[in-house]
Amino acid sequence: MKIFAVGMNYPRHNKSLQESAFRPERPVIFTKADSSLLKDNKPFFIPDHLGPIEYEAEVVVRICKLGKTISQRFAHRYYDAVTVGVDFTARQLQQQLRAEGLPWDLCKGFDGAAAMGQWVDLDKFRDVQALRFRLDVNGATVQEGCTSDMLYKVDELIAYISRYFTLKTGDILYTGCPADCGPVRIDDHVEGYLEDRKVLEFNCK
Image (cartoon, rainbow, N blue to C red):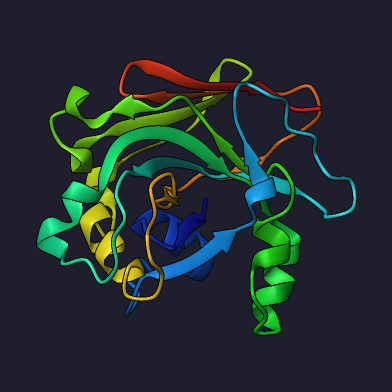
């Protein structure tokens, strides 16, 4: 199983990070280690050596078919379910790595950094590019977005990634986060919603 993720895929988030809401010249793709996957309502243990850890709520897509060099017009055949996930980021470390031109692995791929909710079949929704999602922390909504705002759509991302990696059944794609990322703290209770469905829930330890 491979975990792919997309950076800078929502204009308001981009503006908050680099004062530019423009679409990147190409999708910003990175991967997470399989040990970063956190599911089944298991708690997120906040690492104490990486500095501030921030949540990034995202729609996550499940790959359901083997594919390589997939045409964008056929990309919809290669995923079958979605959920909400959290791409945890060691923000201060990320800023240091970016300043030095280094990869993001250490700030994005640490243990538990890819929280994932329960899958919902795509046929439950009208359009994957019209999904509203949100993240609540301790009962208050802290982040919300809609996939219609994505700079690179799901089919574009799958076509692009498949030029470099063979996609396999069970691979996972985090599609980017909207604005308003923020820190998590010990004893926080986190919930993720896809439309009106609660699909993600866990505690921070």
